[in-house]
Image: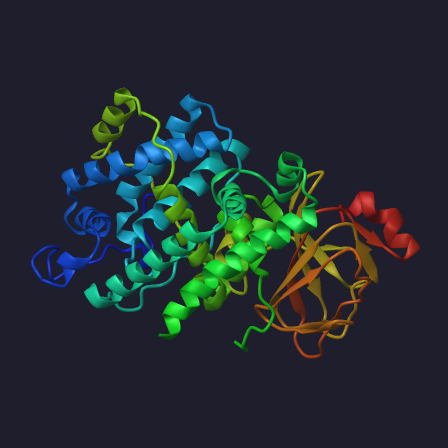
Amino acid sequence: MLNAATSIQDRPRPPASDPVGASPGMSQVSEQTQWMLLVRDARDKQAFARLFDHFAPRLKGMLMRGGLQAGLAEEVVQDTMLSVWHKAHLFDPHRAQVSGWVYQIARNRQIDVLRKERRPVPEELKGDDVQEDDALQIIALEQQTSRLRAALAQLSPEQRVLVEQAYLGDLSHSELQGLTGLPLGTIKSRIRLGLKRLRRELQNKQTT
Amino acid sequence: MSEIRHHIPDDLLAAYAGGNLSYAFSMVVAAHVSMCVECRAQLSSHETVGGALLDDGDTPSISQAMRQSVFARLDEPVPVPQSPRRMGVFPGPVAQALGYEDPHWRRIGGSVRQTLLHRSDKDSVRLLYIPAGQAVPDHGHNGLELTLVLQGAFSDETGQFGVGDVEVADDSLEHTPVASPGTPCICLAATDARLRFNAVVPRLLQPVLGI
């Protein structure tokens, strides 16, 4: 069901009272987040171009790795980047990293295109009161993500391959089995082991 | 709403984030996440993992024509698909699958009723309406079955499930869910293989009823 009308939870936020770059706090958030906030609040096409040039090749790489041919992969990249522009008002830097948000949009578009069915997605969280961007909270989330990246870098090559297959390739667990020749149970438990380690990294951060 | 005690297992959340779940299971995950802050946060961490891997990934070249076409289209008004929204007891993704209309209930034995939302040769997802105190016919299943409570509650051999709770049953479980007294129980139930009923008559009716 396509509908141009926006629902209550889709309503655009007012521009941040603290424009990006103007306050010392916001200047410390990552470049990606700053670009995304400029797209969200100021409809800044230059900032969008930077996001495009960063993400479009990476999205194409991910989609091709998942089995899409170059042409179809570019179609999904195009849809995804247009959604990033048009759904920018839904981006909340207190809850998501730009890369995770873009990743999730690309997954939705890929499945809609490939399976020709609408992927069931959760309701958007209702923004009760429009919240001003809080640089400290945003930076805290970015620091958590850095720790997660550090944890990813510490995985054994074998675990890294499994984690990448689970998140980057469109492979079900049973396809993984065919690929590596390992028994299904072993693979599942290894994915869980890898994730547990990632999660512990995140949780340690959350409790400190 | 009572506190949710039975959540989506983490490997299923990861599989959803990675796009590796069937339509039926994706529906249950999306519906539960719509009701459960904890699983929403957990899903979001999986998406963060995906995003981090995306950031580190390959960078094949992009055609300039595609890039130009995206920039040419930024100012075009486009119909943005609306986010799913809740309708009564039905979470957004379920309401969307119903086309925002009331379910058409069909009797499937005794006074239990169902509305089929999707069925393929691999997976299926349906709404079940079980009057208070009534049982769903004793059944086992091939593969995995996810049952999410949307209204009321049910209990079976493994415990009690209230609104927002998900029961995960594999093929080793033969269970008889019974709706708790009080309110009729409405569930979202998904399988990745056809349910196998133990009672003879329902089994004969399986092909007809689409269970």
